[in-house]
Image 1 (cartoon, rainbow, N blue to C red):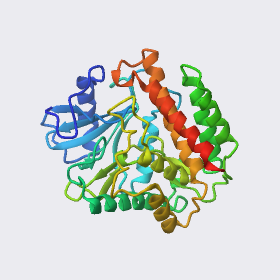
Image 2 (cartoon, rainbow, N blue to C red):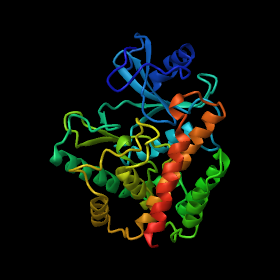
Image 3 (cartoon, rainbow, N blue to C red):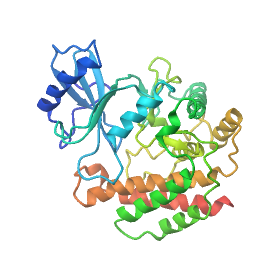
Image 4 (cartoon, rainbow, N blue to C red):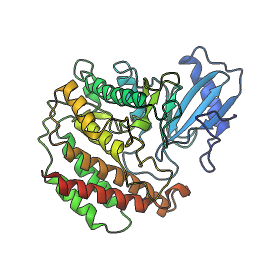
Length: 363
């Protein structure tokens, strides 16, 4: 396949068994996609973004799908669960159409070595490392996009998880407690050296976990940020998809707000990786400030964000642990991807930022 604007040739070491995949898809796709052109050959490209699950463009002629699979090598327990992600999208897409529609789940590891699934292909603009030329320095467009990002999160959190049956995907009560303790355990399992600042952050979070009865629970995307949002190519302020539902569940919606704020405002993190998505492009003129995000979300939802710094601190901590898990795999030789060789420095930067937020919070 000739890679398109948003895809590239498949990276070395991340190729799929095309013969087995082609045979399987030709058997299974006609039952779920009547319009597919199986007279055309199977073609594969790869989407370059992300450091976690691997995402491919699968095509038969004009019929295109997105294939998601776990990363190469051993992974953390309960992580990268493709059947769970497929089932999540099956429940969420009918209630929140910005979530892509899942098409086909394969739990047979004999096909490409791991479970995988296909979902519909949506085409649009994803903002990653720089402001796209369609937006540029246009302050009105930057502000309108800022508004629409917040409004998209508001809409997600407005889905009634009980009447729609979405509540079945998780356990709302005690969600924040499980998140804090769970990510602290992941840190202990994946750390490659001692980092006293991380221990201080964990202690601060554990001592300030908010009341968590689950009464105000919503869908929680759990990785809601600008580069997990797809925009219309013709109107780059209009959201046409929300991507990467791997960690989605139900619980305290402020987890999503804290993560959005953290990614939106990051300044120093990412110095170890000049191509890092951790260096926010939304700090310049025209973009919403942290305070404007909080104000718009509060006004639309009526939720109290007076203790949002807890969730921002947790977000920095969580992202640091995610990156540490990737670095652990690199150190152990479970992946040879050289993008990961300096991720230990990113972990230290994010941990320092989390601790600074905590110490200055006053809560």
